[in-house]
Each structure stands twice: as structure tokens, then as C-alpha cells.
Image (cartoon, rainbow, N blue to C red; front, top):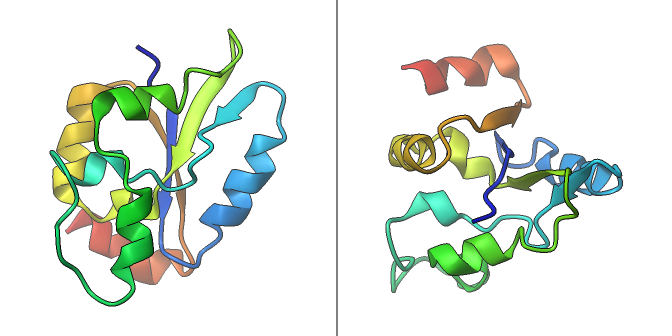
Length: 123
């Protein structure tokens, strides 16, 4: 059952996409082919309705465990597996899901204005 060794989270528009792209080139790392699978944001399917910009978001949402694990199945042996979903940083229910599924996962957090944004995560 391949699950990630690390997760990239952070503020939207803070560089998580650039970091994901850069890390994909590292020979000892494997990044999921879906940049934001959003697996830990729900306990099941994404909401049926949303706002005007949510169509793309829900289309990319990987919510079945077997589909999420399949994202990491092509990782070469010995590589560290990771994915990037910025909103993991802010979603407390996602924190619980992550802890339950992969208790030893590492986080890489990207912030635009760390002093101003960091306190929101600690409240």
C-alpha cells in the first residue's frame, strides 16, 4: 500500500506548484502525477455542489483510497513519495486524517508571509 512519505502544504499562490515541479526532477523523489489530489480533505467524495471555480477542483479530487495509492504505485523502489495539496495546511479535519493514515509523514510547508500566515495554523 504505497502512501506518501511527505506532503507539501501551504498558502495558495506561495510556490507549491514550483516546488512540486522542482522536486519531480530529483532522482530520489517521486511526486504524484496529480499535483493536488486533495485526498485528505474529505472522508469520501467531494461535495456535489460548489462555486463557479470548483469544477476543475472537483475533477482532480482523488477520494478513493485505491486511486490515491495508485498515484504512488509507479515510484521506483527506495524513492521517497510525495504530493502537494496546499489546503492541507488549513484543514484541521485533514490533519486528523493524515495522522491516522500516515502518522510518520513529513510536511514541507510553503508560506508567502510566514509571520502573518503562520499564526493562523497554530490557533
